[in-house]
Length: 506
Ligand SMILES: Cc1cc2nc3c(=O)[nH]c(=O)nc-3n(C[C@H](O)[C@H](O)[C@H](O)COP(=O)(O)OP(=O)(O)OC[C@H]3O[C@@H](n4cnc5c(N)ncnc54)[C@H](O)[C@@H]3O)c2cc1C
Image (cartoon, rainbow, N blue to C red):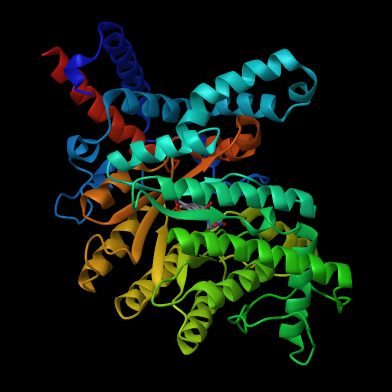
């Protein structure tokens, strides 16, 4: 929409909003100590746990990132947001502004988590309605696959792509797993009907198609075999290495019982669900990205992912992608071992590289058992590990059929990876390299990378509002405070809105 066509009422709203945010943002250049301590650490995909406080100072000032000579140009906010209509920009800006108000987020989280939500139908309906028109619209692609499709088309028109995520969580039984599988298959089907290449991948959580208690049991058995290689697992199929020498094995302190016939049967069912999804993805020629979760169950998730990759990643076309969490001390070693084994077996492999979202529960569990945390001792080590894994994968894809999704909101990681990709001659628009951010977050980085010529996706969850609420609470938690990931977005959007408002008036 051309800015000059904004109706007078919207123009007035825009003027009031910008004036207010300009007023409040005066403190953003010098955050108070209390704002630092309350700024949420980022752990987007872990819906159950409270994030830890951030101990580092994330980049908040545009100046840090606005070097025009740099590969990512955040200086030109007009160009950066040129594909976003003013209404969308205003809406996004308002939501980020609201999400950065800690008392409001605290209150919202208190209400959403309170028993009142279960007992008071009127309050519940009012809250759901409010959430739907604010955070849900901002962070989610829609309530069903049709709305999600429409949203992806819009995102695609702005030059980005979508990772389509049917937002279902942990499941306890086979019936629920079957239901979820249907949802995932519908997601791939819908992706097939969307404009070519608008969906970069479909995302699956293994905990939605295989009971979590079984994943715990399988992980225990895999760990025991890592400790005692002669320990026999009759059900185990071909896979890549799941552990390195330094991988922590403390989750399994005594010899686990073998799987019962029922458990073996359930494992077979879980595997078959994943295979059905892989077959559908092969048919659609759309990659299937498997999310990483907690270390207690990650060996089973990796096992299922790698054995599916061996079966379905053929002919230089990695359909199945695993995820590496760079906050884990053994992340780089496991990535090296898995890619080495894949090379040896001539299996093209895809990896999504993330920092990791389960920091506080990982550290708590390790400490409760009397072991060191599996997470790097400092945020700098996590950053270094992330950049190292990204760099390794970029070198890999430059010389093989492997592929990588660099999933991060960290501007420095984005800049380093983009620079390295160009140095390696990984052409812009090369489908083996995708950058990705969560929908509703870090739009400046997404558009910056896209304007620099790279493929960029938004991670777009969809589902009924009630089901997505835990995901939304996470988004609200991580975006609050002056030092949150969204600070750069907030500042740049405000500048661009101000520019458009001036252009509309004069
Ligand atoms: C497209 C996409 C897909 C994702 N998929 C997954 C997934 O499958 N599994 C998953 O676990 N997560 C996933 N995530 C979330 C991701 O792991 C991060 O939680 C999130 O993206 C923040 O990391 P960042 O790279 O954006 O970096 P930043 O914005 O720089 O965030 C850094 C954050 O890392 C945390 N941190 C990590 N290590 C340390 C440490 N040693 N000390 C202190 N703080 C530390 C802190 O919370 C800190 O705030 C995904 C994210 C995206 C964008």
